[in-house]
View 1 (cartoon, rainbow, N blue to C red):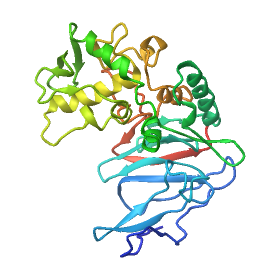
View 2: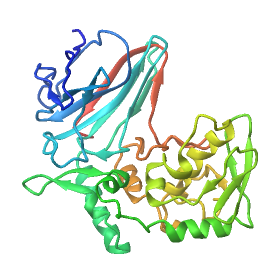
View 3: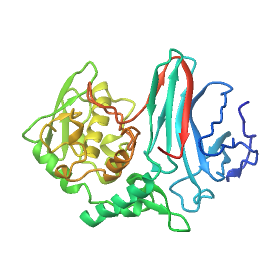
View 4: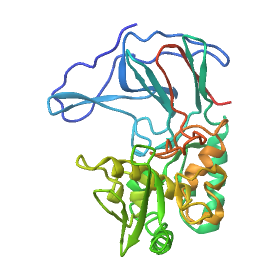
Length: 343
C-alpha cells in the first residue's frame, strides 16, 4: 500500500475526503494484515463500526485534516461507534498507546512484539465497558449531584455509544463542574500552608518542597508559582497554573504533570499524599480522597489490565510504581497487533 495525500484545497470550509481510505476488517476472530508504507509521526489509526467521514480545509496555505469529533453532536460521524490508537513510527523506534483522554468508545487493545520476541501489551477496555462506565457514572451523580451521568452519549436506540471525558463535556457546557473542585482545592491550600508538599521530579532536581502562601503554591527552585486551579484547569491539565511556557525551567516542567495528576487521582489529602507521585496506587480515586476524576477511575476499572490514558498526565508514575498509561515502545518492532471489540 501507499500513503494517501489529500489534494490541495483553497476552501476555508471543510471539504469531504471522497477517496476510499478505509480498510475493511473481517468477521469476529479474523485477522487483517497491513504493512505501513513508511514512517509516521503523531498519527492515529482509526477503527469504526460504520463509516467515518474525514474532511480537509485550507489552513494558512496548508492542507489540514478535519477528524471526526466526539464532542460535536452535529458531526457527520456522531452516530458511529469509533475509536483510535495513537502511533508514532520512526526509524529509531515505535511508540503507540490507547487514549481515553477525550472519550471511551469502540473497545480496542494492542500488543507490540519486538524483533527479539519480547512482548508489551495494553489490553484495553472490556467489550461492555461503555455501558458499565455509564452505570457507575449515574451512581456517582446520585452521590454528589454533579453531571457525571451526562458524560454518556447514546444512539437512536438508547444504547450507550461513548463516554466523554469531563474536560470535553465542559467545552460544551462551560458551567458544568464549575465548583466541583473548589472545596478540595481550598483544603489543599490550607493543608500545605503548614506542611510541605514534596514533589519527586524524577529528574536531576530530585525532591522539591512546595508550600502555599495566600492563593499561590510555591516550589523550591521553580521559576513560577501556581495559582489555585479551576475545574477546567484540573480536568484539562493544560490551562491556568498547568499551562507550560517556553521559558519554564525543568523543575516547573516536572511539577506541572505531577501536581495535576495528584488532583485527578485525589491523593493530596490522604495519608502519604504529601509525597507525589504517590507510590501506593490503592490510594488513587478513593472516596476518602473526596473530589476526584471519577471518569478516569471508572475507565481504569474497566480496562482489562488497568492500562490506558484516562487523562493527559496519566503517564505520571512513581519510581518503581505501576504504569497506568500503557504507552508501548520498542526500538526494533516486528508487529503491532490491534484487537477490536474488547476482551
